Length: 106
Image 1: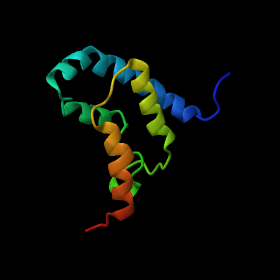
Image 2: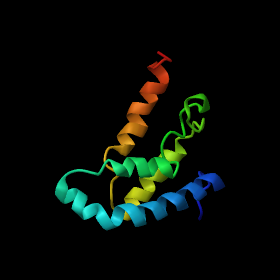
Image 3: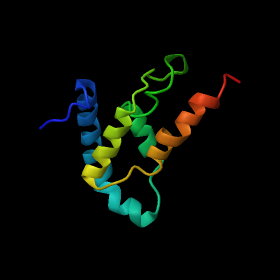
């Protein structure tokens, strides 16, 4: 039975994330583990595919989408590939909500 939690936009995002992980993470993941660090460029690449900033208001350059299901897709696809994305999810799930609640224009 197919889950009804996700809409077509989430499934489209899922395909982008799954493809990204397969091409840009899985082939390098063992080396990152050995090195003990994820390259900074990974975060730039994630931004380029639209995986960052979707929850920030549009006036600040974000997507203006407050939908945690996109974060869930990132977690599910990372787990499917048996990899992590470094501290990426900490930023999305912990840092960003604090910024959105407590930061101001100054």
